[in-house]
Amino acid sequence: MLRLHYNLEKVSMGLVVAIIVAASIGGIVEIAPLFTIDETVELPDDLRPHTPLELAGRHIYMREGCYACHSQMVRSLADELDRYGPYSLPSESAYDHPMLWGSKRTGPDLARVGGKYSDDWHARHLIDPRSVVPASIMPSYPWLRRPLDTELLRERLETLAKLGVPYDEAMIGASQADALAQSRPDGEGADAVRARYGEKVVIRDFDGDPSRLTELDALIAYLQSLGTLTDAPYTILKASSADIPDGDGHE
Amino acid sequence: MSDTTDPRKLPSADPHTGNRRVDPITGYDTTGHDWGGITELNTAFPKIVIWALALTFLYSLVAWILLPAWPLGRDYTRGILGLDQGEQAIEGLRELTDDRLPWLSRFSDGDLRALQSDAVLIRQAMPAAERLFEDNCSACHGATGRGGPGFPVLADGYWLWGDDPGGIAETIRFGINSDHADARIAEMPSFDWMARADRLALADYVARLPGAGPVHSSLPGAALFTENCAACHGDGGRGDLEAGAPSLTDDAVIYGQDRSTVMETLSRGRRGVMPAWIDRLSAAEINLLAIYVYRLGQPVGEGAQ
Image (cartoon, rainbow over all chains, first blue to last red; front, side, top):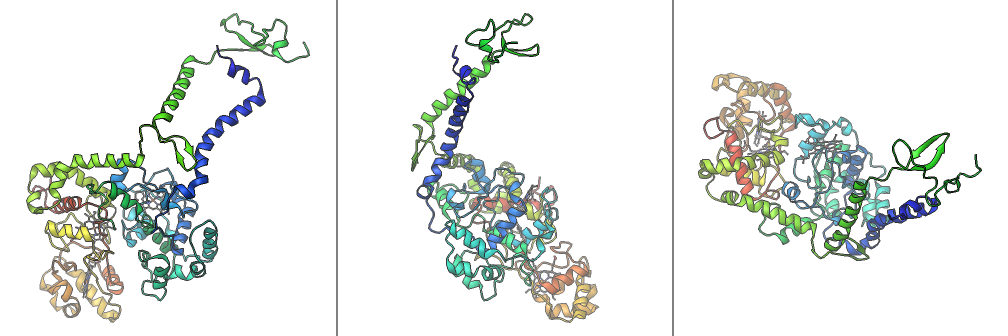
């Protein structure tokens, strides 16, 4: 009979050390790769950071706890690819602090939801989900019509820049103006937003009320940006499977 | 009472385990601990758990060799099977699509009307079409295509853009007022410049149109309508297929045709957005959905199951 454990249990300090050793193996396997993450996760050239308006929307998403019901990670399983599109790459959320992959799915995954629905649908759905999806169990968020507070945007961009997100001086300086400009397609600032964040940034009056900048504007801008920050996942799917129809044609 | 609590030092103690007095009732050893006369049985750890534990350790050893496992700085042990989850998922997706290919590929091109009358093919394809519709379309058009305010009913046989499956596929491919360059455009301008009295007269006229013929041509709104609206909505609001402006004489509505909703339509204008699906769905899937949607609009018995 092996009495190793029997005797170890009687030496309390020895037991503590043994527990620490056993637990840290699991920890090290998970933590060690993070030290080389800058070299092992390659960032796609076309990856763009969130615009200030999308960033504000992201904070509302976290504030309202949307992540408690929605993941933002298409897993590498055939059925998920079939339903949602290409699986999520680590590089896609390289600029997200914190990332919002999540694992709880009471509602569908949102990693590829950008462009799937219209702004009008999102607005109706967030204010009262059951007005468009009668059987929905998603909560209503009627207070999102209140004005968006852009006060902290500058600090938020600055903080993220410290963490390595490529926000330059001009982006940080213009953060409040850019947030407003992204909801005014005919306004003067729209071109500046495009110049700073790329042609693919969606510039629209998201909540259908051109006179005000609301939390709804920010949240919908964020939702419409999900899955559109880089084309990398779509090219991987296409490169390795030219004959698969799903996900084809994405530019 | 002796002054030591170490069971090994108790009288008659086994030097290794302490006092191993045997419990007379169960026949088990005791641990040697004694709490005012209450003693503890030293029951053995269940064998089955030890075996299960041993097996899991054994499995992990095998897994380390076969599968990707340990981090090594910039790399990791890849395992001799060389598996990659991403590649496996894409492989799995290819198998899924291969299973569908025999019937799905028939929708990639060809005459949709002819396909739609192939009963065997349709029976095979409709469950997949229903799933696609639920995943992508039902949030706006309703689970059965019954629509809702702002989102047109697809199951009523009234079409904004013509009742040809090919045309419906075109709508699904590029969308309406979507971001796509080839999108269909359907814009109802705002008439907020018009005097409120005129707008009220128009709303009154439009609200009475459904089901009525030229009976109302004497209403004050009728002349205003001919002047401002007929160019898009047709004479008397009868509609003009292929232009996206709905007929105002039938029962089908997008936003509503009661007076207050029409007043809102007139003051704000309307520009309903139907997203483009060309980037999300394959050509065959879009054609399949076009036939599915077309059949929703058919009276039961005439094509629909």
